[in-house]
Length: 204
Image (cartoon, rainbow, N blue to C red; front, side, top):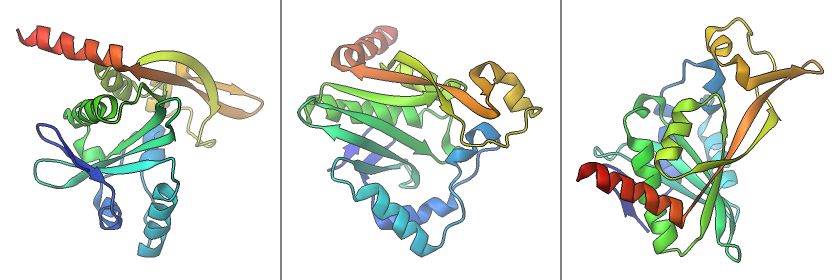
């Protein structure tokens, strides 16, 4: 299975693709450092790959740009065939964010997901402070359906760091622990088609 957009190609993630992730850049924003994959040995990468792809209810894909370079990967997780829904996870090389690749990847995949795979809805979770990602998801038809607190991955975050200070309203500190607000978002066929109609209208 292969899906193509104007600039991207989406195909099942292979082990050889996973090795290339070691060449990716790193987020400077400490709030996003959880997306920075640590320096792993080949054996650790193989274990990571097998963990990600080994579950039958998950599908993982590599995202390649027009130069056939791996710039991201996406997981369609917790697939429920009866309910026709799943959960999206997507990660990009920081060197290739803010260039429209994320929006193109998601919309291209949703075309397949809804009209070929006949699924009904897709969910995702995103941190409230990750405004760039939220804008991308909204362009693809996702809408916020819930908001809740989750323990932040870095309990030693510097509260004086300017990135934290700017997004401090997205955090809560209680009981000596740091929590951040999470949005749960959902897209269905109707909202996805609405984004396509809006896009066609803007082009007219």
